[in-house]
Structure formats: C-alpha cells, structure tokens
Amino acid sequence: MKLSPKQHAWLDYLTVIIFAVAPMALGLAGAAAMLSYLLAGVHLLVTLLTAFPGGMWPVIPFRLHGFIELAVGPTLLAAPWLLGFAGIAQMFYSAMGVVILLVWSLTGYSEAPETVTP
Image 1 (tube, rainbow, N blue to C red):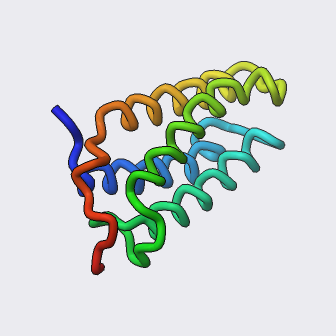
Image 2 (cartoon, helix red, strand yellow):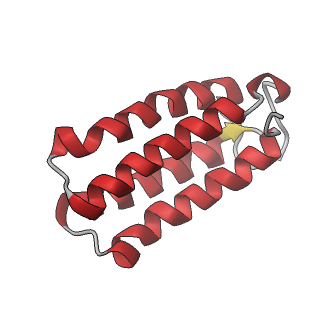
C-alpha cells in the first residue's frame, strides 16, 4: 500500500508539530532544541510550497519533495553523532530519521500531478 499525496501531507503537518513541540515535551535544550525548531520551520515551508493537496503555494514538485525527504532522513540519523547529541536527543533524532525514511518509502510520489491548484 502506498500513501497518497493527501495522506503524506497530513503526515508532513504532523511532523511539523512534532518538531515544534519536541523541545518542550522532551526537555531538549541548546543545539538539539534549536535544530528541532529549525526543522519544524523548514518542514512547514517545504510542505506549504509543495505541489500536492496539502500545499498552499505549489512551487516544489512532489517528486522533489520526496528527494528532499530522502536526504533529510539519513541526515537526521547521523545528526546525533555529528552534533554530539546524547540521551533523549539522540533517540529523538534517530527515531525521526527512521520515521521520515519510512514515510518516504511508503509514499506514491508518482501519484501527484506536477502542479496543483490549492
């Protein structure tokens, strides 16, 4: 089963919420918190600009959105070691990397048109 572009959009907005709330909910501080807030903002921007049912200003083709997520997943998996995160921050970023890769692997990127009228 492949996730539809609309289902993927819902998961993208959920991801934004998770990144935005994680510092407070998990007690992330310093660089781990700042990165989470930054990722919430960037993920929101990419989602809003993607040409799929959840996007408001369809500038980014859905397939490019997929390539971005394919790059972000492994980067998040490596982030704890590259940035020296330990404990809950290490677990959070590793888990989010796995989740983003899982969503990427389950999404039917070819199902979305190249342009969408919001």
